[in-house]
Length: 205
Image (cartoon, rainbow, N blue to C red; front, side, top):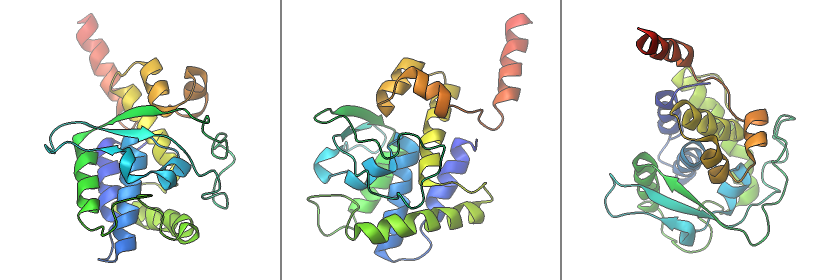
């Protein structure tokens, strides 16, 4: 699994032109990679769901209230078991978002004229079709193995686990059980084996 630095390079590379759609794909990729939202939750995100501090060095929050299960059904993969499952009706989970995502969202909002309703969906079918293409091109430009929007969710889970965040907290943020987290999301992050070996060397002297 690519590192956090790889993720940031991919996020930046998603902006290939000055077109608004290009900026949208960059912000969508950042939300999926840094907040772990399902692709359908990214499409359903509303401006009212964003809590962004004035200070770009502070954490913000995303209130995840709904998901569009229709988004991207043509490019989901067999290992994406809960992609089309509806989010639990009426539930809300609060996902803390790091300063890097706060900055990315503020960057996108500065380019947006309409600041009510859904954040990303203007023409849902167009966005659902081209986001994976933009992400694939960004990965190639960044020399990172090809990723789908759903792979970004796996990156989020794997990076948090590698950082030592408790599994129960990761599962809560993602709206999954710990079992689902372990069965479908957490995979080794690049360089993690070497890092663990160094920790053991320090532990055992």
